[in-house]
Image 1: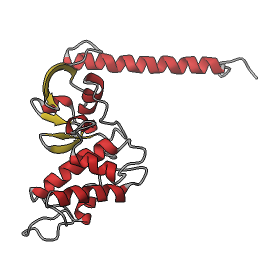
Image 2: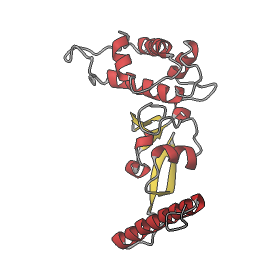
Image 3: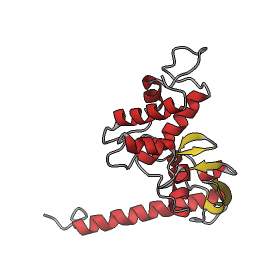
Image 4: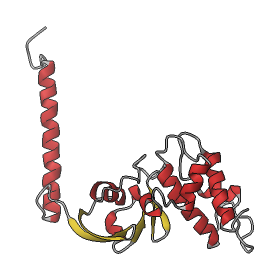
Length: 216
């Protein structure tokens, strides 16, 4: 084979590729600097005030920090789990001002002044929330990874029904709303249990709903 311009070694090709990537990244960084006037790599930060499980926190955060990472990495509340990180499994569900949210899809800066409740705030060993007690009694978990999100979502689900907020399966929009098995399963459909403990979770929720006078 001729030693001309086509005689390039594999190492040479790889080195060229790495150099191209580096040049591309540098171009992006320079473009960002030119666009907003900030030095490349400089991040915007903001002070965020949150009350988590009854305790006030004032945090200096990168504005891109999710509520999930704020709880786990900055406040060390690791009961809230990171599952898919795309809002599809519900493992990261927490309560914000009493309503459930997927904390992986929500930036902390969006919750200035909000009240956040995590699984640690619902109850603790020796003083469990009724829903936590019911999950234990009905074995509403197997590996347990999704359980904190399931319990937060279950608590919010019964609150939604108590307030008369309809779902896609609510048949009578004018009558009293009941925590039927179908209502609870529909509302919990965003919380995935990879172990398949759904029937046990439904039983636990039914017990709490019955004790609260919401039984279907």
